[in-house]
Length: 285
Image 1 (cartoon, rainbow, N blue to C red):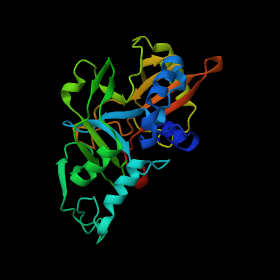
Image 2 (image 1 turned 60 degrees about the vertical axis):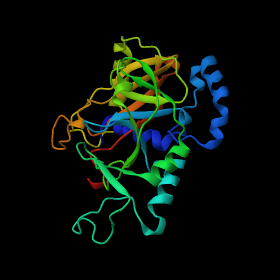
Image 3 (image 1 turned 180 degrees about the horizontal axis):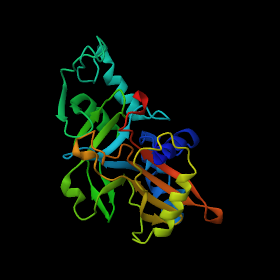
Image 4 (image 1 turned 120 degrees about the vertical axis):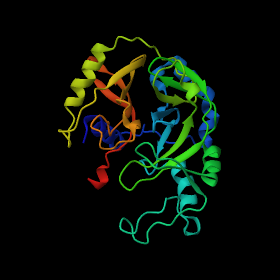
């Protein structure tokens, strides 16, 4: 597995800080969270505050919330309730050779994009359920800056091999002036865009070399820091070529990810938060 993908696996197994969708009870803690962030950034409750954002096709930018992740979240519940109601499933129809009799076409599902790695679809009932779970009005963080925005459509992508995701789309105009979109949050995080992260990037690269790698022959994309907050370093591992739609293109990076590293005693690093996508298809490898 790619080094950063291995890091993502370590996060899933070893920490309770992995993203889980915002619950109704979390809505009442905004003021306390804001105060905690202002007083001590490391107190940031990232499991209710941070979302990973990706260019998912040449035409779609969006928050990608992974389904069936660990621990289970409210988006999983909403999706599953609709997906399996009355034996109707939110999958496109598949050739019998791939899944004989397993998948049924969904009459209320619309394919909206096939130009990237995913078949991206839309379902009105699912969109309504997700909007009830995830309030609108967020902050978008890019490689060069921050901007307030509201997500647009609610889409989803299901694949038997790749990461399954619900997608909250970002309008192209909302990325103007902030560079490549990377993260989103409910509360505005007072990130510093230092531009000079050579030393921390070197430390992160050294840390990644210590992680097991199941796919050593695959191209490696360096992890880059784009901002910091106190002892936290916000990074991305992505060459942004997954949107060319050609899965055989050697330039494509199959494990895009977003990670927050924390510097602790003796300047060592730990993973504070992380999220990533598997576009290679590890379960089918």
